[in-house]
Length: 82
Image (tube, rainbow, N blue to C red; front, side, top):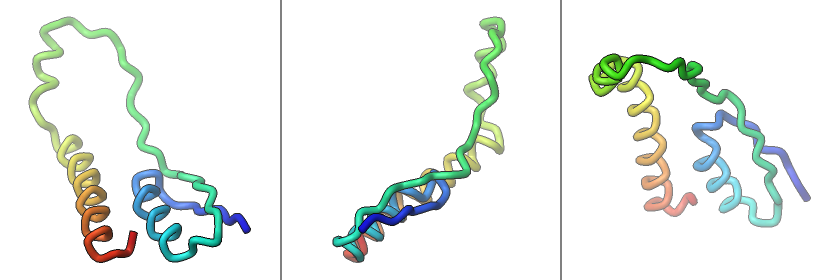
């Protein structure tokens, strides 16, 4: 039996791991949504690239989301949910 698993692309690895552990007889087809798109890269002068090393609030949001998922995966594995 196959089922579609639809969730945010950011949460897909954790969700897929949990569902595969809980329902081993079912084959899940991942259907990630809600991708984060990036802006097209426009060539900029070299001196503008120097400012890109300064963190912005957007960088902290992306980092926070990624760490939430990595720590969530580690926690789920420790609990035996994955």
